[in-house]
Image 1 (tube, rainbow, N blue to C red):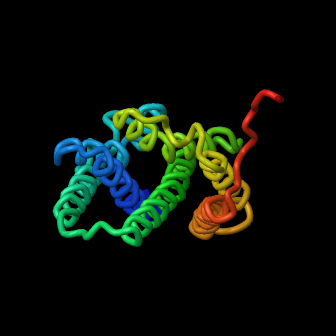
Image 2 (cartoon, rainbow, N blue to C red):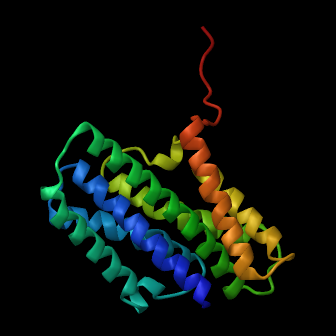
Length: 213
């Protein structure tokens, strides 16, 4: 795997582990529950991706770095949380940081999922495999987190979430033919981040079917 892949993997693991820990805190879980959510969010999507690609055991189990980073993030957030003064502005800051971390994790794992397809199946030139692996890697951990926290997975209802991952995967597939793969990866990362931030800021929503009155 390249240095680019490792950067995105670490970035995504930290970002998603943070979001998992925040969900655990919001559900008033103990330190074990917070850590479990952080680990599931941080490495769960990548483990599902690896199993689908025939990489066994998954890379998260071959190398402990992802697990250790997720656990360390959960412990750090749990240790700092009691000293956090809860005010209206601090709640807004936590929501802001959650959105930042979730967006960075989504973009990072979209890229690592697509790159895994390129490295594992170099003779596959169609767009479906890299895009789907990017999507599974990006949303898989979050879905496990939400199901463990007994809430509807955000990917099923949140504004332009999975769609941003799909757009980033497709962009990476297209751009890899026009520029070096590292540049294409950063461009795809930026596309996912831009779409998510625009969706949050402007309140973009996908079509919600409803009955006419």
